[in-house]
Image (cartoon, rainbow, N blue to C red; front, top):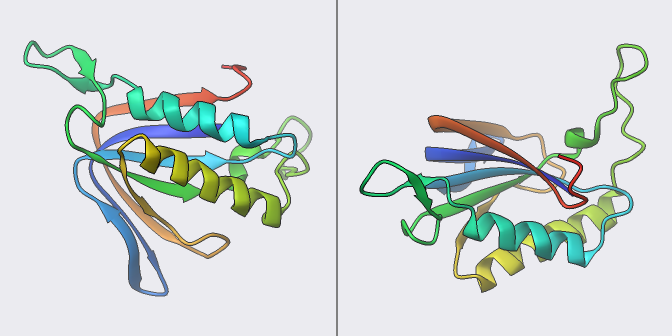
Length: 149
């Protein structure tokens, strides 16, 4: 499972012109689910993100988590994080999980975040979404449950 985590002033997702999820101060998480991912991958990333210390403390150091700053997390499914562009110019998505399994693990990831005490907003799974992110920093972190990076 892969995640692109961005610290945000605000972020939102709309589908067909209607806002379906938004957060103010917090994180935007773009979540890709791979063919071999399991619940343990979702739990690992959710727990890592809930405790990720990328918010500044009083001294200006990144020592606080989204929980410490009473922030929220917008989670957007993004199978394209498993796009393989090593051959040719058209990405292959064969390593991405099938939609049914991906949606189940996406929902599980969000539930584990909520159990950590995080307020969670979401996009709409398998929808064409417009995502607006007001990045704070900018701070962008890449995470992989298999610890590839």
